[in-house]
Image (cartoon, rainbow, N blue to C red):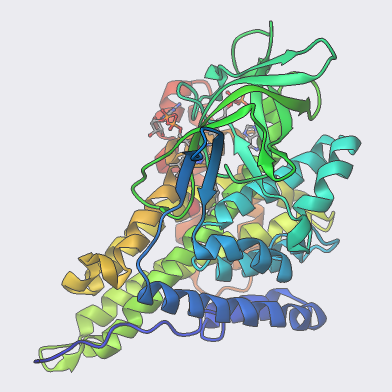
Length: 496
Ligand code: MFK
Ligand code: FAD
């Protein structure tokens, strides 16, 4: 046999991540930093083990069995190994519960865990994000009965009592525009609300609860008339018969994530609040899951770059390791710069979220959070695809070969820009977020960040971009079509 290439090795994703370390040292008080350390060490070790395990085994997909041998409808889903481990890893290391501690640092500490866990979890983080979003929306609703019932499970630190939540919004005719929702909520003779309809994408189909949008029977058309309902899906160990799994979707990526098409045939449901304005009630959930999306997209970039950097030390061309080829080194450096910017934007959102939720924020910071959340989601969603694609090219032909484990990075990355609001929908949301003086809040924050900077050129460029954005928004305030057509360009400029 001739030459055999050394495959890339994954360095410990926690111990070797100088960026994450630097950010945590800067942001956290020493006592909290020390308390966080054991969980981050353990999640870094788990991530490294999961990569090595994935390299040794053939990738599996969840399998849906709809009927048993005797003709009973069972809708049983077999999950991958990482998914079976999900509840244990999540609760043992408080991946989700940490975000709900009473501290302005809670969200940053939560998202440091998520960042390390995401790829090893095989997108178990998707339903975790929705569970976090459901807990946040339930708290925002102030519905004490539902909070008392669900929060101890959603935020549990014990796998045996932990519940996952779904987010049932998308329908065949209503994804971005949920105003087209066809699911109906009807009260039975006892006054119990029940849901009837079809949800077209359900990614937490193995979850115990969900928050879903539905139109109370007799209500008007349009989004404003939708209500937000809480449902439970299980009756002991069995799925409730009023929830029918039609099929698992065959997707480009996120293969380990069981995304289902479902039917609701009278599933009992409880309104979170008033029987209208469901979109307003679900918005706290959207903003949380969009933050998770940004963190997970950034984690995908980190993984792609780490592997590409390592490979550049193992692969030789034209008599030198790739890393010693100036153009290859420059390519990696350019990717690193884009990644570090995405990391900074994403963790700034996590930092602000914790401060705002715990009343520690300056007045302009809440407005800034509202604007940066869609910007971080849309920017990192696009950047993850770009960087994962570039990273595959860094491996040459090997980057195109399935059992290197590399193509999966690109396939999975494509989802970040689509779910939880596409790039266009998030660009329009950033216009919504610019109402009031959120651009002013961004300017105030940037002045603060730049105060210590000696880079006059960078300051000039940023001021010019902000001036142009402000002028554009003001000039077209009454020309909605023009403003919408330029929303993506504006969002990209602001994010950059
Ligand atoms: C591993 C990574 C982790 C990520 C996991 C992801 C799992 C995937 C799960 C999903 O994909 S779940 C489905 C996600 N679906 C979406 O994100 C829907 C995308 N569409 C939108 O976001 C539309 O813009 C929207 C549905 C919100 C439009 O609805 P409307 O009712 O036509 O919009 P409208 O009238 O502007 O807003 C209604 C209210 O909500 C307004 O408040 P008021 O009633 O008080 O005026 C808005 O201000 C408010 N609102 C909307 N978006 C908001 C918001 N408030 C705060 N934050 C927001 N983002
Ligand atoms: P459409 O709304 O039809 O959009 C089509 C195109 O039109 C997009 O490019 C969009 O940007 C553009 N567009 C739409 N409106 C505008 C506008 N006003 N201006 C400019 N452009 C516009 N949903 C759930 O509710 N729960 C889940 O658990 C869930 N899991 C998912 C898992 C996966 C793997 C995927 C891929 C999706 C999942 N979704 C889930 C659905 C996802 O949220 C929707 O697919 C997404 O919100 C887009 O909706 P749509 O598919 O109806 O696309």
